[in-house]
Image (cartoon, rainbow, N blue to C red):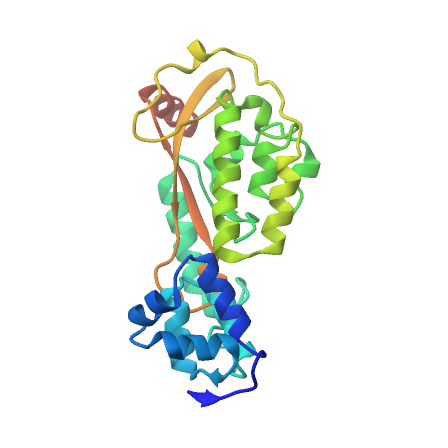
Length: 266
């Protein structure tokens, strides 16, 4: 660590992440094999952290790779993680693997979204659920949150809309706390302001609720379908684009949904 100008540079950013994670200077120092005094000097601008030390602090604070680049820039270093466009030839293998994964999950629905829920790819089962939606919701860039919660989207078809809407908004709140994304906050505020349509039906229509997860109960072609959602991300990503991808799969939660989806595939 070398002496830097007080009050400038990476210090306030680092302190903001530490306070957001509710970690004391001493706790962070113990995790990063440092001292609370060193952490204090970095946050106040009295010392400039080395590149490796800054990345080590960011790792222990669970700072997203995009924001790790911002920390490095604020400290006077070059960004460590590239942001490769998804259509770049360098990601051909990744795109092919994602397509195979989505197709292999059929006849069950699966899709890939980015950090602001823009749909990157989806399989045919997802497209079946979107039958009849207005064109303005399906024009690129398609956004999964808008499709789900818009009163002209899937919302009127979701039989447990209040519970599912609350789950999605809470999920976005957690991501905003982790990522500090202005774009994600704007999306959250937009979809939270949508009027909530009454999907009709009654609790008896829904049938028993699986004890292991909140189901998404949605009507399609007069059939009530029940799904539980699973979200996967890439482990130890070294690229901003890859780090922000998420694969969501909808697992049938009852035998009737399995039978119906298999009949559509047939």
